[in-house]
Length: 305
Image (cartoon, rainbow, N blue to C red; front, side, top):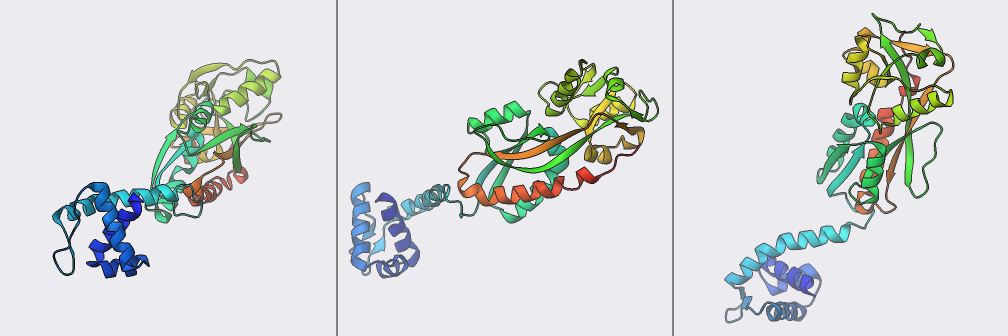
């Protein structure tokens, strides 16, 4: 009853009368009086000067009113958290794989901020296993997951596939390491510039090569497509990037896509989340739409030789 009593005090203060508070809360004036008396009993303090006609709030009542306002706002927010139809507010903790962040980050932030100005976005990037651990520990609300296509979610996860991303083998245009049209066997003899361990793209390539009895040969592993493509452009090794990353790279003119007759790698992008999103549901729906739009069309882009 404490919160109902505080709501009553706020109504009395904001309408300047017991009668006005009764109308605002759809209660009788006697019910308003009982609630104020209950709050006075709980606090051990007088909140209305009943010697005046009509009763006026005491100085202490004004102080309690100022503290009650944010408290009641927090309670309303607390009660909205489980409600999927409620307007998103608070913080949305979003975990992205680096590849998805490179392609979709700008497309995510703008519409989310426009639609839900009361929602704070907290975005981080990590490898798949770390994102899964964060989600399971309740440290992340929504995450993206990348798996070689075709894919299904592991047991215990809920989510939606939001797109697919074809990966391209690239080399230096100036210092070519393989023919522009080649085979997996020829690729296996070359060194690569890739992400460190934990990257889904690297793991997929390593698995494909292992399936043909070939090890993955690395000249360097470094985080981020920009640094990788800079090294590839210098002829230090082959690279594996998305069509979007190649298209937008400042090194694009120095790179050439390699067509491989017996090798193709496409990654499915999943948006995963706990079973209950509560008042983040509308934000999750908008995020799914933004991710689909950002990722759409990548499968249709033709690599340049």
